[in-house]
Length: 457
Image (cartoon, rainbow, N blue to C red; front, side, top):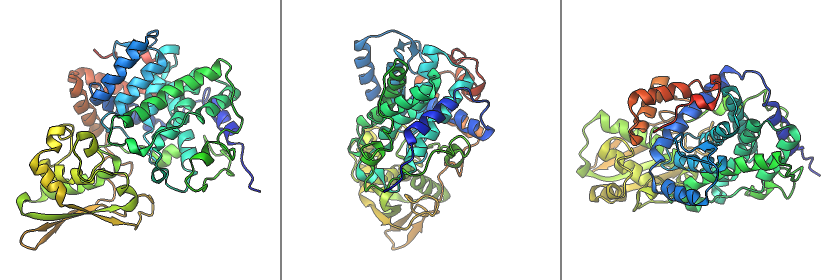
């Protein structure tokens, strides 16, 4: 009989330990600051997206007290509503960071800010909440040896509620028992399928996770109880989600808080507002395009090397909308050949449907490989493209091992600022105001309260 560790209880104890913990390691704080900064920048680009507007109308019709800012604006809602809407906006165009095959910051940051506005908490508490949420989320996700994506689960949707609940529990200062109950509640709140990639349903995955996190922590604080083994039980979350039952329930969480997953995985910052698995390919095509003059009319075929597993995350081979194009390797190649990059301007229905875009889309062939990067089993060792030209010659791009912005090829502070500044243009935020907000977010752990984060117009 397999010995099962008391994972739900241990995670509750770890969560409570972060409430009064002293300063976090400098390496952890660096990731926390980056996560807050990149999430708010990405949020700017999603504030006016249709999914955000639709959700705003629904939440406003529900009513509720104005305890928390929505998207750092003067508009206020309940904490759970504010977390829901802010996280949805942050994930609306898929420009937010990712790590261990999940989008942690866009769930954690809105949860934390909503509760900081509603119930207080200084920057040190906010940083601790982020670190606790990240570690707990990664600690469960990395126990699964099979692909959750391959089973149809969107990991951000199914484990985001857990991470958000842990972060919210730290913000509320719950004790170990209350944290355990909150985590057990989160185990019953997972949900989100890959079928909604390329639709307005995907941003809701992040939003719902943040909303649920706030609610679970508040319910536990109010006396709500749940199973003591909701994570590790044979009928618990980990077994229920596991594609083939190959999930580690025997190893305890003893190392949490001593060996930091956040140090190992950090955050991958997206340069392009498309699914993370396109980032290397876009870099490859962009470098090829800038290295020489290309006659696009002479291209007869394009081979794009991609892993089988990552190819499965891009179901749209002939995208017809901007939402579908975000999850299309073919569009990523075509748009980059035409424009040198993929940005917000390229992600419009009109651009996606242009004849020159669709001609190049039709030329792309996926060269899928089972060969894996030894440090990331989901990826090919490198992504690259080969152009086949009318005269029979071929042009091969550079092989990209890590995309620009990846944790192993990170942006420097100035690069992070440039992305933030460019995102701020989406809401016409003057550059001095954007810089003030950027600087506050880059020192989030040293703030006295969330009131020191400027309110946007």
